[in-house]
Length: 146
Image (cartoon, rainbow, N blue to C red; front, side, top):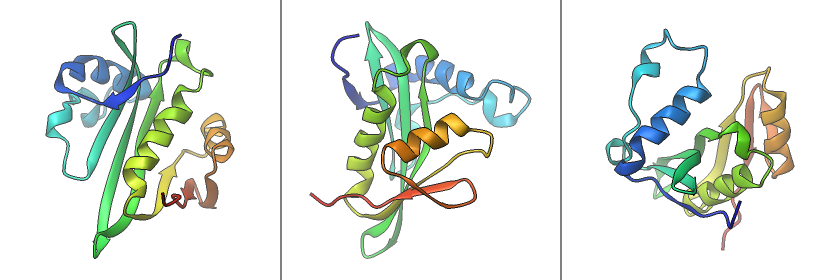
């Protein structure tokens, strides 16, 4: 794999994003959200999806959401993070989260991510990049101000 290049998702990424989203939620095929299509231009204000492409193929994404609280301050949430299995352990997930933190950290007092109790690999990953367990499946980090 060459240099990791991350950019905001575009509508031309929609089908590949949807395919990865469905891989992330394998086993939830009966849930209503599963049939949704991911269309970057239709995400709400404060949301941004970042993608990694390798040889013209989207191989990972991170969905970041910023919630305003007061006076342009708020909290960030990394809602989804997924890297296709064959591209894992190459630094892609870390770079996606770093990109999301730059986006969210401008006005966030904290950035949260949640994992299921059974998601030990994800929990270890988030701890290894600076998140700390705060309660239940929630992990938090405080963005560095540049």
